[in-house]
Each structure stands twice: as structure tokens, then as C-alpha cells.
Length: 118
Image: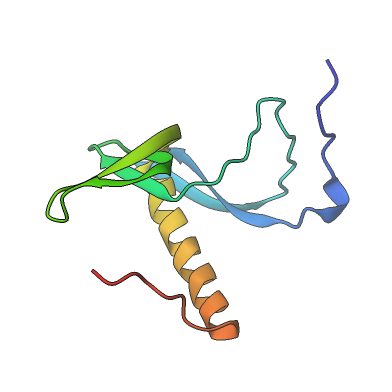
């Protein structure tokens, strides 16, 4: 079976890769060859729930699809759950540092991202 999208070695720089098993984690420079799976998908999410266990983190992504109902003290949101991603705690920690760096770079260039009032 042929790959959905053949890897493009010419455009893939060497990156730090963390590999290993519990108790033995190694960081090395390795060429990254990507192949897109036929099951790859892209979704927009404006809602996320995060669940943490001693072994991993689970991110449940959703989209708010209905207006808020209920009282102002106890509002009710209608959320369509789109899927979930489970990550090892090591990858989750690395993702957090990458996201912080990306947001800081964005805000340094574009300006502060406004946050809703609590």
C-alpha cells in the first residue's frame, strides 16, 4: 500500500527527539520523516476538558454549539464533543513549554491576546 502523502525529506530539518522508556529517557538529534495517515483530521475547538492520571493526560476537545441556558448563577453550555487526545506526561509537559513559547512569540509580534473577564 502506498503512503497517502509521501514523506518530504528535503524540507525536514533535524530536531531534538526525546525517546526511551520509564527511567531511561534520551534526547537525540534525528531526522524526522513524516507520513500523513489517511485517518488524519482537523477540527476547530473552543472548549477543552483536561483529565490527569498518574500516567498520562487526556484532552477532550469540543465545540460550544448552543447558547448558554439556565440561570446566571448556574449556566448550562451545550458542547459537541469532537474527540480526545491522550498524551504521556512527558509529552504533555513538552507541549506546554512549546505552546508558551509560541504564544509569547505571537504576543511579542502581534500584541497581547485578550482574555475574557472572569
